[in-house]
Length: 156
Ligand code: HEC
Image 1 (cartoon, rainbow, N blue to C red):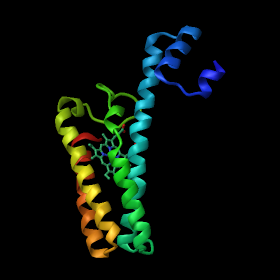
Image 2 (image 1 turned 30 degrees about the vertical axis):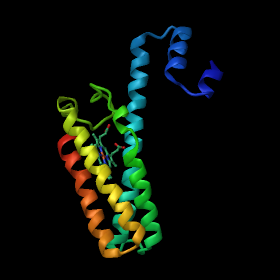
Image 3 (image 1 turned 90 degrees about the vertical axis):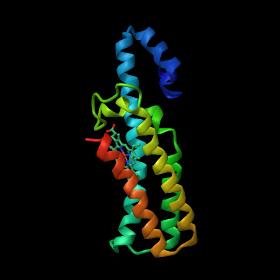
């Protein structure tokens, strides 16, 4: 059991653990659900960290540094490319989450909004590699709009 915990709680070890301890399938499902919420919120927080750092530079709250900006932009694009959808299993609007049920009522639109973020953050990271501050600000603004568009529809 200790060993199972150390190597990580994949699906197989989770069910083995449940079998060994006599936990019902309900408890296993609750555990998986919690991990899905943590995963997607983790990805969102990675994006939030990078967006805020870039925003602070553009607003002058932090010294503008085009290399640092470009790194944040690249990390944002990487985070946006992760399969965050796997962290949104159907019906996971319960528990410690701000996700709205509307996500699963129109999952195609939710996916489209993620695609728009991916495109905007990809072009932000390309623009940022060139180091022009005004162009960075413009591309950052466009990316921020894609965050907001999804949050307005799908996040409390
Ligand atoms: C495709 C839809 C979508 C896009 C695009 C999106 N988000 Fe989110 N975001 C969500 C949803 C849904 C939640 C609520 C998740 C939850 O509470 O389980 C969320 C939650 C968050 C949170 C709070 C996480 C927490 O710990 O509760 C942050 C921060 C965040 N998003 C940042 C961003 C940033 C920054 C961007 C753009 C770079 C972005 N999001 C783009 C859907 C999206």
